[in-house]
Length: 222
Image 1 (tube, rainbow, N blue to C red):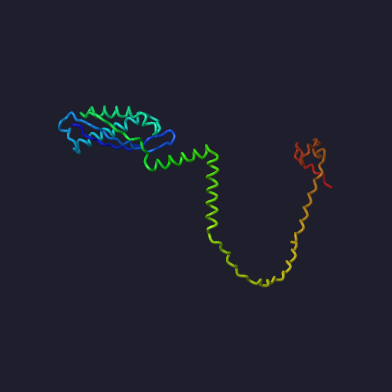
Image 2: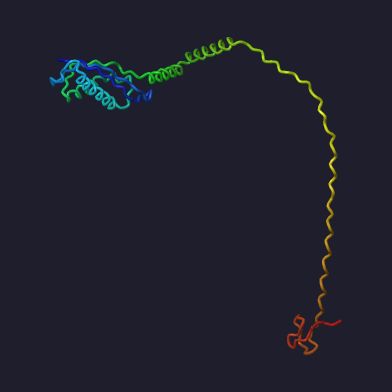
């Protein structure tokens, strides 16, 4: 005897156009069990087992599709149903009928999809973009006109009080610092006059103050 198995699976999907989404696949299967103990219409355990198998097969199949748009999954429902049938058959369930709803993004994903579609429509249609800008400007003007006009508050006036400027005292003239005159440099001592020959031994002087032969003084006495 066949019994109905509803299932619903929500999982992440990378859509090439809308990027990361969360989508749901809902469906209903008409199933028979090869095991008489599980072929019980309305049995929670039997329906739960078959439903979980269908959910797992659904996610695995979509993952095998790879990068695919959520709208394109519906066109491949044949592969999806075949994989569900195969997964249940391994556990002793025979699918005799299947009904699967179109793929549905969750609320957050749907809002992002609608916003992106609206932006793309505006950028591809200059007339629609201009109309939207005019509508926004008119709305802003109506909002501004509806606001009450308020005069700016009067500012208190203050009489200008006379300002007394103190007399400026002339600055004292700078006093030049006295610099002591430099002391005169000491006179260099006079160089002694030397004799050309030693008066004692007659040796030719070599420019020294004493004879290199006998040691006598070569300084000329005045």
